[in-house]
Length: 250
Image (cartoon, rainbow, N blue to C red; front, side, top):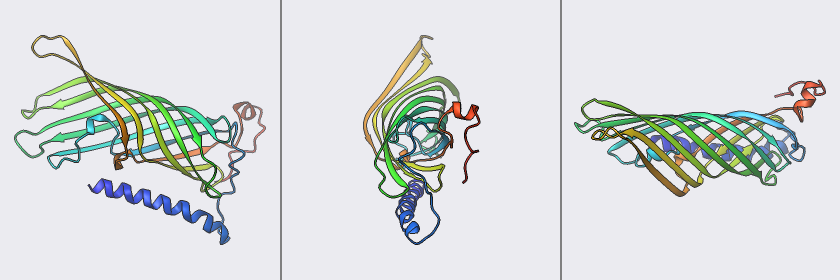
């Protein structure tokens, strides 16, 4: 519950910053002079942080008999195909921990370690302020890793873990400088599938269990903060030809 409040406050603070940006410009306070009509061909890179998790394994974490926590980090590289369309790749790592019936004789814990790789495409809206706009991000991602489960007697098992994700994520972008994109993503519409692979205790044969989910998710755990840097040259060829004027000014 506390984490939800923190994330909701972060969302509110971001919206306040977005609204106040044009007012600051009107009052003569220096703000970004980025031209959102001159992004075509430019590259961007950066990273994101997600506290909480969008993985199926955390469903039920709000139950008072359960405790759950997750953290995910991702690195991005992308390119503006036009002033309103962008695409790119992302890689990342996610850790999820889930405890059922904590502080009882029946307590069990599980933890996931996942390495993710994915592709994304973005469709940006027209600017809703001089340095603010929104986007819809379509994404496809795969995760590979393991899950460690500890039962109430302390015995541990480690199983293989794979997941698949496809969907759409809405986001809003604030451009505090000519090269920085401060982003907030919130919500998810799509489909996820999670496969756990383990050996059956009785037969010794490999077993695969699947968990699948599809629909809307606007829980606080879907809130992700992103920080991107727009490279000041339009293409790698210009960089190699020394035809750009440095890395810009923050």
